[in-house]
Amino acid sequence: MLEQIAVVTGAGSGVGRAVARELAAGGWRLVLAGRRAGPLRETARLSGAEAAVVPTDVTDPAAVDALFAAAVERFGRVDLLFNNAGTFGAPATVDELDVAEWRAVVDLNLTGAFLCARAAFRQMRAQRPQGGRIINNGSISAHVPRPQSVAYTATKHAVTGLTKSLSLDGRPFRIACGQIDIGNAATDMTAAMSLGVRQADGRIAVEPTMDVDDVARTVRHMAELPLEANVQFATVMATAMPYIGRG
Image (cartoon, rainbow, N blue to C red; front, side, top):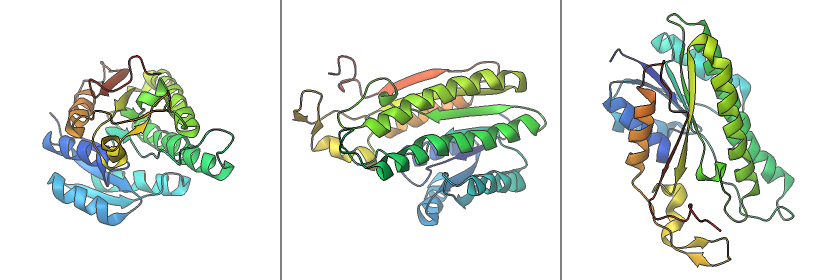
């Protein structure tokens, strides 16, 4: 495989770190983005790859533009964006959810994804050879909600619309876009699964998890397809988690 350049957001932990390490194993050079420099440097160390560490607030348009400018300055182009940064937000029913909390989740999960996709698309369209790939991190919640997750669920449904629009608008420019919808990968974000989480019927129940490296291998497969092929949507989940039949 030719040497390729990947921008990974939310790269300081969890799915983002696992994907960065897996891409590095495939020979990718990395541009690692996240809010805190320390965890990004640790991801770079663990990956063993040539990596640029660029602390970035993906809700800030100027910061996102600076991220992609840094990527191009360091490596000359961008072949992949793994659009991964996100947050679940505080659990609440819609009548209890503070507007500021709603906006914080929307700003990170949706506006942040849009800003990164916009910057990646602009670069991929302009560069020669033209093109590249965007992989959005959706969620099982892009299909079905958890209780008390209105902001998260709404944003993940919206990410699906973003993915479809990017796929269509990218066709003339050899820009492919797909989405990975993840269920119960074992990360810090899902640590509560081992203690029990609220179910649709109100019960608190322990849920199965899967190895986050299985997610990373799936993203790498999507990333390394030729641009003439695309995994439009992939669902990767713990086999026995309550998704099929949720509720």
